[in-house]
Image (tube, rainbow, N blue to C red; front, side):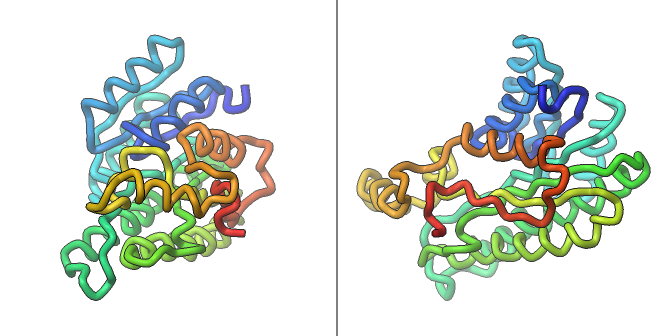
Amino acid sequence: MRLNNKVAIITGAASGFGEGIARRFSKEGASVVVADINFSNAKKISSEINVQGGKSEALKVDVSDSLQTKNMIENSIKFFGKLDILIQNAAIGMSPTPLVETSEEEFDTLFKINVKSVYLGALHSVPVFRKQGNGGVIINTISTAAIRPRPGLTAYNSTKGALVTMTKGLSLELAPDKIRVNGLCPVAGDTAMLEDFLGDGPREEAYSRFVSTVPLGRLSTPRDMANAALYLASDEADFITGVMLEVDGGRCV
């Protein structure tokens, strides 16, 4: 097992990419904390992991809140005794809207949940990693939107662009502590969040437009992201840091 005896927190793990990562990590031997603001779904997934022979706990957390994020880290250590991996996957999307028509409220909310949350995760996890003295792994879910942005999503794209810089900068700051920091950049995924991006027009047409931009001819899936996250979290990637791994079927070529 590639993550045997590891402890991982996955935010936004009650559905979509986060759920896929949590389930795959468990199968690879990790104890997983399913963290999400949707606590009922988080409990359901955590329970299913346990029934299947894994080790999991569920936590309700608003990742944009510093105290809740701190408590998430502390409670995870109470559950499993340590922390090895932090997957910062929680995020929100938006309906297609030109930047100058995006409200200040929506703009602020996007940055609060998509960007500030990653800062808070680092703020409260890094002291733990340093105290443990065994390095650590932080993986941030970013997006191809940071590399090849689509029009009408500029506010959202900007949050993901900020995460590229944050991830790269943090990887350099934490390298002396052997804490690796990487990003995953998925193309639009077949998850519930996709509905945010499709807009109000005919769904099939919007969906087909997204698929048509991916050379391999489909959108990303939780399985794709779980496989990529597994590699970056494992010891196989112990010399990989500051990398933005595109999980995109060729979208960004």
